[in-house]
Image (cartoon, rainbow, N blue to C red; front, side, top):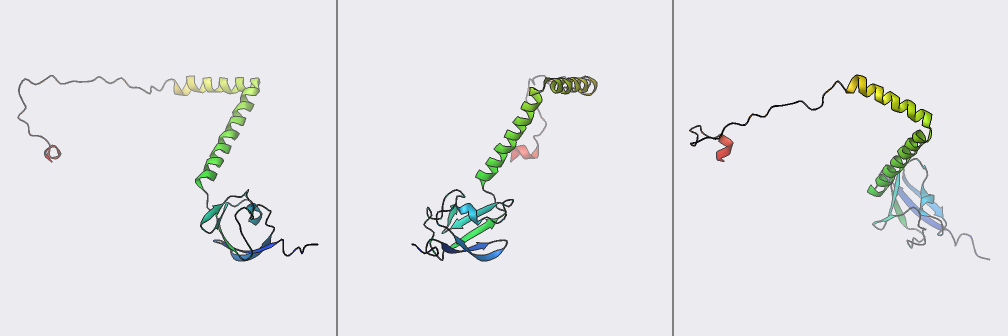
Length: 151
């Protein structure tokens, strides 16, 4: 029978928000087990390498007594991109729900047509402007050039 203490790791987690604490973890568990609060964004760094949440401690060769830095409130560009895609997915779901309900779609479409006809149609977005092109000079002009032209 193996000792349960030998299969567990005692590591130190240093956080930019909560200070340092000692944690006992299983080497076969994911890095995400270090997260205290799921609502906060965490980035874990070990020996200058950013740790992925879904890899294990064993994968990164983390041993007993190692130190892991935790940056809370820091988001990576990849996480920002994932959040952006999730936002777009939710918007698509809302639009599909709207199109799926034909009665609601007709009501909304009729409302937009009414708004366009009453408020937006009278407003002309493109004003007609006549272009005045001066006639070509037969001789060079005697008027001096602006100061910035000479620099």
